[in-house]
Image 1 (tube, rainbow, N blue to C red):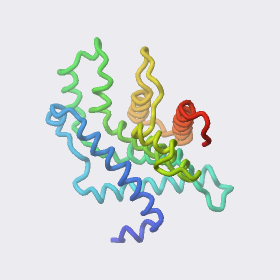
Image 2 (image 1 turned 60 degrees about the vertical axis):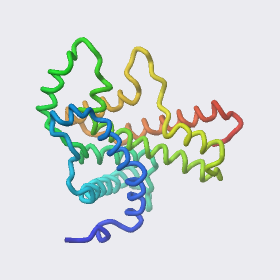
Image 3 (image 1 turned 90 degrees about the vertical axis):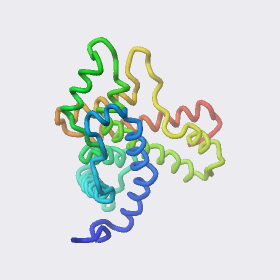
Length: 235
């Protein structure tokens, strides 16, 4: 069996390890902790891996494969193509959909929902997102985590330190700010999570560029919100 170092380059391992440490694994564990304990017990819910390192390696392999493919398909004219953070976020989202980190018995889950809720009369979207759709929730928030890192990196590249207004602004909000919720619609976050679930259920192809554009627009919104409170600054 080949070692991890022989499969992945040192540079790739370093960058993915950083994503794993500050975004992927914390979001997986946080989402797991937020699942209804009654639902966990009813559906034999647990992590989909007994060996966290093996799961990480599977995720890395899929991520690397799709990253190489995206470079080849969309940047064939570049001798040394580099994908932006939005496309990397899309690839990471797709990787988690391919290797879902939370397992549960779906038939048991359906029975649990039927017994617990009258879904025709009430809106239980928050419960669904936190429980049955937890893997899609993880995929979405991990991709947004990359946008957050991108924002901090862009400001630091322009000379900002952790004490500067820009850095404090995003650190204070503890991550990405999402579009304001309309009283007549689901939140932006839940809408994205539901779309990921439905497309996966219907086995539709994942649109990397469309998803990357969505992340780009989310970044632009966050920059606009920063300028709204700090109009004299530059980005």
